[in-house]
Amino acid sequence: MFRRASLISILAFILGIALSCTSSNEHTDAANAMTTDSTSLRVAILPIQECEVLRYAQESGLAREMGLPLELIPFDAMMDVDTAVLSRVAHVYFEDSLRICRIQQDSLRPTMLLPIPVKVSLIAHKQKDITNIKSLKTYMVGITRWSQLEEWLTLMTDTSGLEQMDVFHAQVNSIPLRFNMINGGLIDAAILPMPWADSLTTKLGHTIIEEDILEGMGFFISPSASADSLRVSQASLLKKVYLEALSRLTSTHD
Image 1 (cartoon, rainbow, N blue to C red):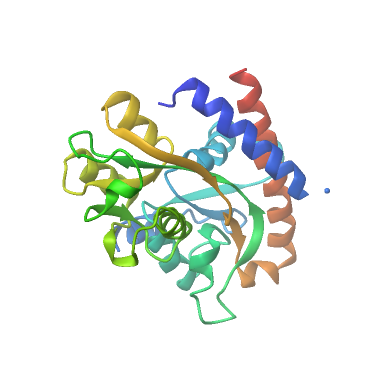
Image 2: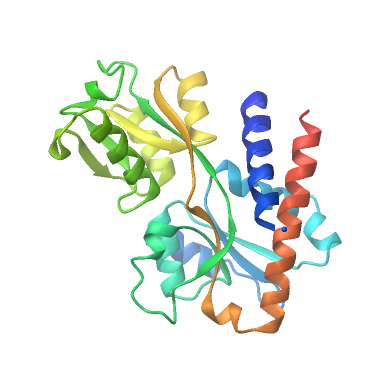
């Protein structure tokens, strides 16, 4: 599913950052899919390469071996994770710090547990005349609004001398939907994480305009979990599980 070189490079980068830190329908379906095991640490994740580390930890049995009963709750969009936060669906969430800031209630706003840098790419449809940031003028770019993705796009367009209204920020929250819309030509460009970006470029022939590794995203722990000694202990163990899984994945693909 992943291109091997891309997987190795991004996992190695995350491992270095993480080690330094340690010295809608989808929502309904995920909520209904939760187990009845009240001892499990419930973690809301997105379909991105960085969250696949936890999926590996769960499916390989590593989390269980390390003493962490882990339940992953998948969502397709950051907005669905926002809803999960407000609904107190999980104990830990993969979130964006800019979106967290928009949660007004202190009793619901999670705090950073483990920052995870995320590799993203700005990709243009292969039939569009888009070769650089400046040529995005008048085109539509699919993103998640009020996020690190939008901040990155704004920074790039500002630096290129474009006016704020020159590029249309199309709010397409679902990652799979954003992938399908640019592949089908319904939007001109999009910002996507791995492995979606890799599939668009290496398999489908669309064009990478820029790529970067963004800070400000990661795993956040809910206030209620922070006040529960069991969940605090599990959250601490979650960081160790993530790093161990990351280490194993990285060494496997060396």
